[in-house]
Amino acid sequence: MREVFVIGTGQSDFGKTPERSAAQLGREAALEAIEDAGIRPADLQGVFSSRVFDAMVTSQSIMKDIGVARIEMVNVENACSGGATAVRSLYKDVAAGFIDIGIAIGVESMTTSPVAGKLIPPDKDDLDGQMGLTMPVLFALQARRLMETHGATPEDFAQVSVKAHDFGALNPRAQYRKRFTVEEVLGSRMIADPITLLQCCPNTDGAAAVVLASAEVAQRYSDLPIRIAGSALVSGEQDFRRPDVTSMPAGQRAAQLAYEQAGVSPSDVDVVELHDAFASEEIVHYEDLGLCERGEGVDLLRSGATSLGGRIPVNPSGGLLSLGHPLAASGVRTIADITNQLRGRAGDVQVPDARVGLAQMLGGVVNGMDVAAASVHVLTR
Image 1 (tube, helix red, strand yellow):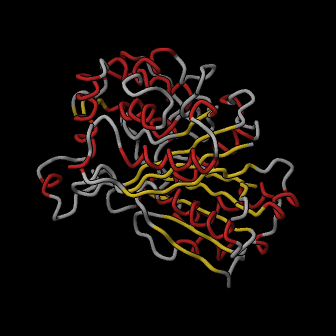
Image 2: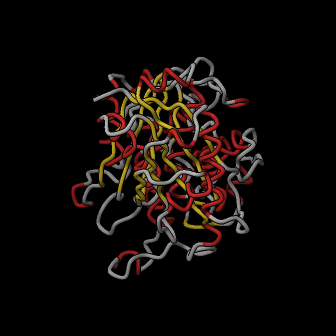
């Protein structure tokens, strides 16, 4: 296996842009990543793209107007982990020596999708979903359990949202650049008790892209390539084997595999971008990623360790809660944001001297499983 490096990142603005097609959004992110890498489009040897809704030959639709054709292009779907799956798929091709350089793209146009303005509907054979066990309800039940077993309070969940919006206000590409107080978060419309509206991520349009290359190519084009030291993707676990609803075994397993491959421990990580579709979820991931001991996630939040200036800042981009969540794009965006942190070019949300970063993404609900897919990438400077 060869070492693989990120040498270029790109992202569109995140927001509601129904006037722009998914291909246009993807093209903007891809062009920015190609320019950032300092390569010509013709240098690319492979393209992996991901899109959840209305997906069809996404890679080809994005790349045709960039002038890239007649190379291998693959289109993948893995719900919210789709973008991370595209990155991992490209990573494996470069690591194995099939190609030396390629691009991974995640893109979504939620405002023109079939679920625009609606809840994502459960499958017809998903009895729990048909009876009302939708995504907000699932996470509300988990939040209730955190309150019973971890001593969490609604104010703790609101604080996660306040932190995310404080960061998002500093991110020029965030969908919402507005700060809120704990009282405003708690006072927003109740969605599924104890989760209020401002504890839910918004529907978002957007795209992100990364250019990956072998060591030889990376040294040719980049002064500061960022190594993908660990890459893991696993499916979920059957719910009846799940010992504790305050943990998501797939996310925990993916983290263990990525740490082992990278040869680092959680205490080595300087900055994290993770899946925070609902505010209470972030506390669960603290524990599953090993950022603290089991049962200490609430204390980690309250200590300020996960804020800027703390021991381990989490979601300095603003996360899904503030930056927005264009499903398949988010897994690529988190890897791009961690790359920018390790390159020292994260602007107002830069974590000083960050050298090891972690990008995590979960995706999808399958009836009877904790989650459909979970991915973790560990990147090092």
